Length: 336
Image (tube, rainbow, N blue to C red):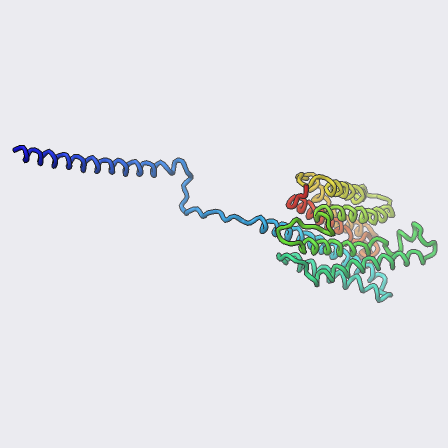
């Protein structure tokens, strides 16, 4: 009897342990189900599985920022070259191309526009030899053209006087082609830097170099606009804008060139954007000036050539775009 009682007790204990184990597993399963049911309340549901974020190497980010700044400079060079192309074509057509050298700025400006469009579409690093050659030709043509225009002024009766500065060949116009070449040259020097390094130009920080050169270029363009608007006696108050807005932009860029690079220059950025719009609006103001001449636009063949130069104001827009590229370089590649 004792053996039978012991066997029954053992069997009962085994059944109890099995039942407890089954109950424990059931409770664990219920707890897991409850946790899954509570999960959507704590996390935003999504019908699609989330993909793990792909980390972009810092070298790739720096390379993209450098190419972006170079493409901005290409756009600036292209806008200035387009302005020079239209302006020189009109002015030299008025002079009947009596000197065959007057075709040179038209050819080089056209090539500069084409090179700038190519540079804008090029997302690769590294300087492009053909674009470098075109921009160098544009810069040299602008310098030689300034010499020709200065000679044209000095050979007239009275030499270097206000009358000749006002009505002879515009002394500052060819320099705009040199500015296009300069902006293009800077774009290629920015591209030429090794990926993963802070871009430099001639050993200087690229952002600071572009800011300083663009500020100086703005002041030179202000001199040309100021001379021709002085000829017009500033009869319209808006004629003061090209001699007041760009100098402030030049001063702000000068401050960016020598100041701290880690500063977010929101006011400078907005002022450069205002300068860009001013250059575009200048075309409309010059068109209005043409309409005020005798015969208005009905006599466009005469008034478009003898009135305010329609293609000139966008040069300010191109330089302002270069200034924005400089700010981008300073923010993406701080050197302090």
